[in-house]
Image (cartoon, rainbow, N blue to C red; front, side):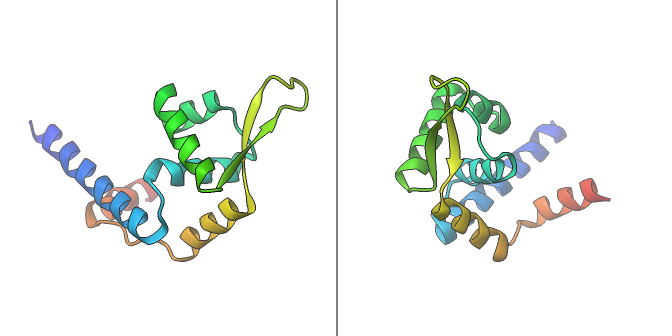
Length: 120
C-alpha cells in the first residue's frame, strides 16, 4: 500500500507541474514533451510520437491537433515516401520551447527529490 500512496504523490506532483506549465506557457505536459521530442529528433511520425510519449494513438492525435492549432508544429511529407506524414517544430514552436527552457519551471519538491536521486 505504501508504494501505491507514493505513486499517488508522484502523480499529484506531475499534475501540479502540468498546471504550472499550462498557466505560464499555455502548454499541456504532453504538448511540452512533444515539442522537446521534435526539437531533439527533428521530425517524427504520429506513431513515433505515440511511442515516445507513451500515449495511445487517439491521445496522440489530440496532442498533435492541439499543437498544430497553436501553430507550434506542422506536417511535412516524407522525402522517400510521400504517403508518410511527419511532424516538425515551427519557428513559433522553437520559440515557445526556448521560452520554457529559459524560464525553467519550479518543480514540486517531490519531483526535485526524485530527479536529484536519478541524477546522482
